[in-house]
Length: 287
Image 1: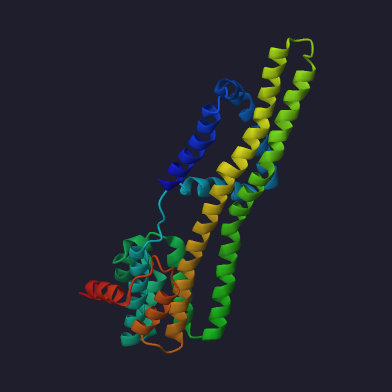
Image 2: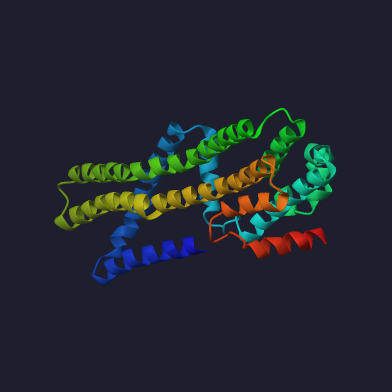
């Protein structure tokens, strides 16, 4: 919602001031389809050349996700921490082997079914069950698992940042494509030097629209979208950090209630549940 509002405010100020100062918006609108086709077409071609298909798909998916609200809410984090608490508490009371079936078949696990939002996210479920499986096997110590977790989180971070970097490169190239469109317009104008001054003026104005659009698309559209995508990547990474901290605290001998407190502390302040909120949520799920 705020993304759309931001775009509307930006475009209203740019074109509104232009019109208020006596600018002829008709010149811009007349050249808009041709210049936009040149700039966006060239940018899309370069984008496809510059990126693997998996990055291209992820970039389009990420841009679409910018127009949706964040899924990383306080309620989601409370569900994650409550799920971890239930699993760790079960392992503490009944032994690590008691959660083996929950780990091997999370789709059939009564514990995971209590938290449908988390159970539907296969990346999170896989991350949790993989490391719980290692804990059940008992072959690795906390330091080895921490190192492995860091490597996996870093890999996830690199994959998630690839489309962000691709959008950043696209934004950096758009002003140049705007210049290309403007130069072509000037070439077209020079080929029509016999035309009346009014006609030549309109042709030069249309050519300059290309430069304007290239800069506008770069810094008014794609650069802000890339920045928002980057913030969303950081949010996603924080979720894995929360799970990692909780599981490592449990491996080091802390009680489940203390372990989830470790995990709660690493969350961003705007979505971090308070101690009492998390405690009441866990108690409610147990009831």
